[in-house]
Length: 232
Image (cartoon, rainbow, N blue to C red; front, side, top):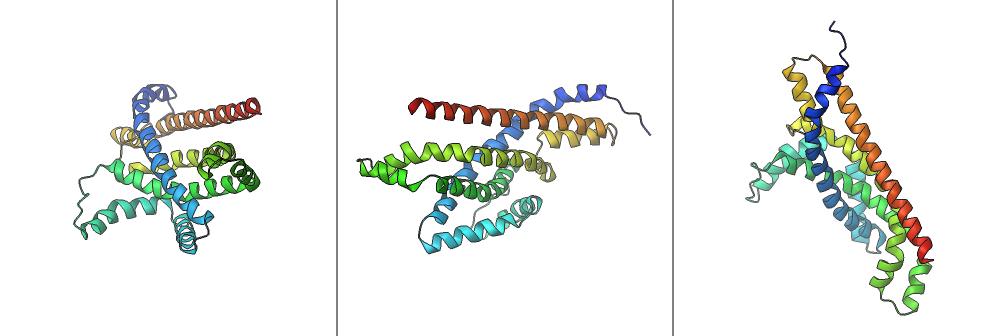
């Protein structure tokens, strides 16, 4: 058995770090599109319309039951075939498109629940009081309800974001070269040697990313609390 070489972890880290940009791009794209869809789903569940609520409930229930890797393969292999029926050819689309599409679908289901619970956590009397003193519904939402929703949503949003970052490592299974994909390439180039060292390097990078996200969310939450006290 080949001996463990800790120094190789230090050697491989500079090779992996540039691919953090790919991982970050996937996360940012997914958060943007997944959050937009999540807002629509949350609105469907909150509003009184029966059709919108049923569609949102079915979407969330179904997507939550599908493993990430299964949905990734369904989107990667199935979406081009489905769109071809309508004359749309996406066979030449980059792998990042399929990854962002897949994880946006998954992220939206989580965000729908985060946004819904955050909205319902705010006392409806505050909105009604704001409207009663002359604010429009939009102004009441933007100035009174939304800031409180953001504070309530931050912890759950942070957890969902960390889960997204970790599940995004599955992107290498369809050939996207992010930090996990690059790690797999390095292991393959070494014919399976230094696998433990490479995975430890990946562990360090994912741990650092998780800490950065948690600290950033903590600072944002503290800042919002400070602004609230200052306004009060």
